[in-house]
Image (tube, rainbow, N blue to C red):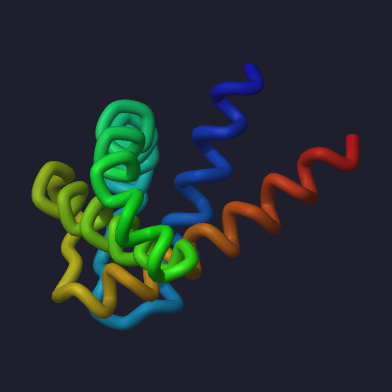
Amino acid sequence: MKLFIHWIISAIAIIIAAYLIPGVHVTILSALVLAIVLGIINIFFKPIISLITLPINILTLGIFSLVVNALLIMLAGVIVPNFTVDGFWPAFFFAIVLALVSAVFHAMGKKD
């Protein structure tokens, strides 16, 4: 049940972030699929890419992680149908807003 709620919260955060950022287009069904795809990407690809880009991350004090997140969002845009990102900058800001909205929703859920 907890996994299902986390999935729904992630999909809602994706819809809100897509609404706030121009250049990102998503449907409700594709938001549900995108939540799963982003979870899979974050489990399998992000640790490897983060390890490879560790020297750049150290030099930029972690700011380069935002670039990695934007590129992973663009990768998800290629995989998920009906989810489009118009370029790097919309993906960059979408990743930031998605992280903030998800953090707020998950913090609200932990008050139980």
